[in-house]
Image (cartoon, rainbow, N blue to C red):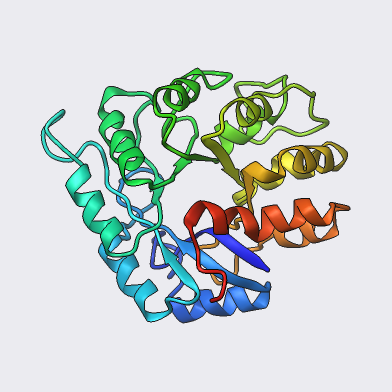
Length: 278
């Protein structure tokens, strides 16, 4: 069974109509995906349009056995320092949201304005899917800001994602390259943080995770075996024509049954408290 922990609905880019629920379900069926997390988009960075939590909840309510809603809000709401996200996120959690994301805020990952969101998610038991690149939830090399958040909020589960997270799979990182090529040097920061912090997980979605694994398939097998309890199958699907390279790549890797089951479904069931009978 496959559970996709990173999928999108709605029009996100002006050049692409995006997916409606029926189109997403068709893509899921095409790749043998049983259930998918649908992410809200409520920050102006990266994409052209917003997909509010209320719309995500409405779509997922049409297909509750297959679509799982996440919520979002931007920490820059209202005047700086006056926004309390807890009541809003508590309302979304009560309506059925199982996590927070996609978090796409154009602030440093450990900016003071971000902390009320982390605090609220920790209190509500909502894992947060954290996109990290040169502008969104940005951090220094070796991810010291992310580590500070992991240390300060031990009850908050963070799911790492995107280029500046996954390039740190290698111990040697060129700060000018978002999608590095060539063999992975062992001892990368991602594996260190996944090992040291119980509250860090990572999703295998998008070109960032696929690049991190496919650049060195031999290293990928060892990494996936060692870290299998901390990794989540995911695609970042948002288009009807998008290639989902991670699906055949994982299927062809010589992984143990235990690692494969953990990554493909079991970790998502545990993290999101899913009803496996569905």
